[in-house]
Image 1: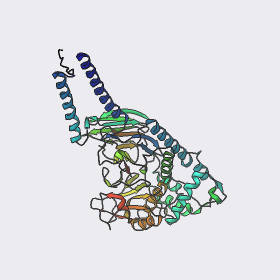
Image 2 (image 1 turned 60 degrees about the vertical axis):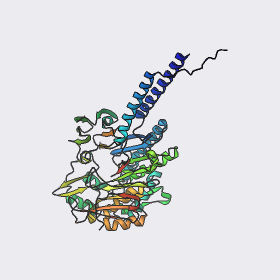
Image 3 (image 1 turned 90 degrees about the vertical axis):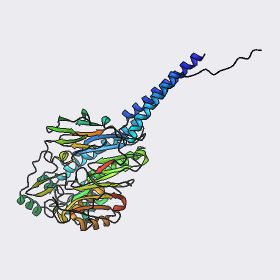
Image 4 (image 1 turned 30 degrees about the vertical axis):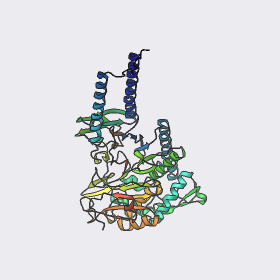
Length: 369
Length: 136
């Protein structure tokens, strides 16, 4: 009896030990991170819109997480299919190939919503955010993967500016089911707003499908649901525009909010000491340099607004940009070169009143000027 | 009537107890060290490299090495050095991946979108003060 009891106990002990070790192994391989016994979730990366989208879903149900990520990816592909100006079959290409004669053109619900927001931001920014700079964007080639990034001929830039009114001739028809493109309207290019729209749609889809904790990061435009690992708020850093491995601060209370940043530090080239970047000023046809802006981060209640407003505020420059963000009800941070030298000058920042209450700053002594 | 002393059967011998103490002590020392060390375990951190949808390598971050990965536009050199990862010789025009600089924390990644190559650091716990995403 003693011998039997001893061996039974040993067996139970052995089984317990194996279970514990197996449990650690399962958690170690199943989840992206382990942090103090909880999980950060599953992360899914996909190449979309010329960049990478990361969908992080914090849920122990792997099947639900995979379903959520698949839904998001399908939705982003659907949106890309409508708004890709380089796809001849897209709705935006159909509009771009239509004559600019003021005849109403039928549009779908997505196009209507995005154009409506784009025109609203265009009006609010005095035309400095423009959804119809297609000819100019193609000339500069910042969205082309094979472009050589040479400085375009100044005469061609001037000729475009002289012959086109860009987005000034765009009007939405009754009920938003048509769009009217007046003569001299430029080619539609909604690249400065469409990632934000895709993030809005993705977050809404995940919510509708019962996913409570998730983070979408599409080309740096970010939307969240619920909380991150250990039940704490998701932590969104803001890229330092001149130090690749640093961030300006951390936004922690992002539930219900969206974050977008526009900067001159990724899509750019330097010629004769001057930086030429992808944020174009419709007034000049060249890279925006008003007030020597370097980066703009916007926090808004929708990502489509955050995305477009960050571009618009960049073109407006730090002084007008902050007023513009206030007028939209957004919070924002504009980093600029205090002495006008965007290559090696001293950085400074301006922010809306509430921004630094949301972002825990690590501004490394940047002065508010 | 003779009384018989009833004794519970000894479940563990001295050897069993010594074994238990050894295993417990070793486990405590191992996990205690990891916790004391900030939860980081560089040996378990890997740079997971993907070209398109295909995983092409899992590289131990603790081992310095260089790997050339062929992408859509050509080869990208991925350098692991002193626990960090960076890209060199990207064939694209804007070289955004090179401008990203070095990454060294779990969850961080470098992307060469034109070549469709990603390097993401996985494994090891996320640092307590780490970021979930970077707006850029």
